[in-house]
Image 1 (cartoon, rainbow, N blue to C red):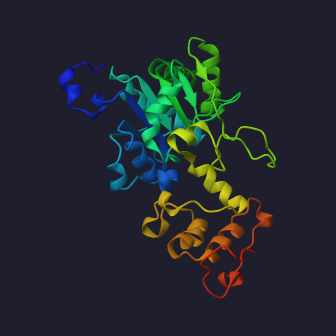
Image 2 (image 1 turned 45 degrees about the vertical axis):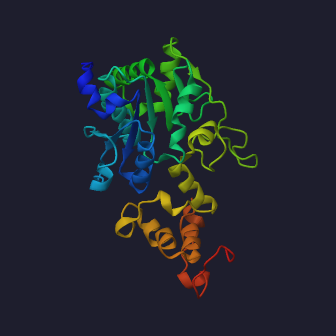
Image 3 (image 1 turned 120 degrees about the horizontal axis):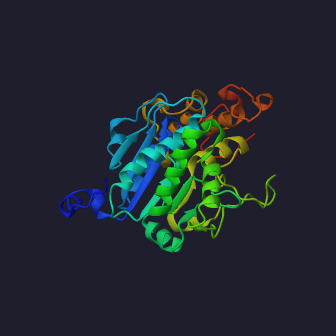
Length: 312
């Protein structure tokens, strides 16, 4: 069903815009989700959070932020892949029902826009193309994408067809999108004007960093202040980089949305400003178990450290 009643549209927030923002999210992103949703709401567009509940339901203040919520059915296996795919399928039902919607944005629950007022410029930059992603090479990554209505709804039908006839564990959103663009030549993909690139001295130097792990310059960063908080957060721990600003985190109830390792280390850094906890976070968070070190707090200094001058 497509809603065409003008009186209904005038009295419904979705009738006041031509753009829907769909935020596929799950409980592992709750540490960032409040900030992410609040920033998307600042665009003035209609925001749908399509949530895949593994264990934790968002608190009421987060539930109150977007215009609508969609809750997918329970699925098994390949949780991140299946979650994203079904999140998008369910949320598409809302976008499809309103004929005034011309553009759809999909942005993951840990991907934030620091400059949400730039959304129209990003839509204008897409122009007559049907899809523009925050990063693309041979892969069109799905962390943050702007779609034309026909392209998005056709992609959703492509997802449903594949999920019904094949093993869903074998598909990532990126593989499905790649095949969709190849098979549906009527839709035009706009190559990302400026991709986030790995630093030159990195092992993958010169390649596209689809997770924007270092907050690199890119088209989406320049226009809407895009940053992949999840990608940055992981890289910061592994490479001992400058931590994210506290404003991005939801640290309620002693950091309930963080892991035990994060609660015992970086949470205490954010709440006390003591850099000793940050150093402990780095040492215990090494990617390899053999490189992890577990020292008492006093190893990093007998007194609280207010700056980063005594990193070991």
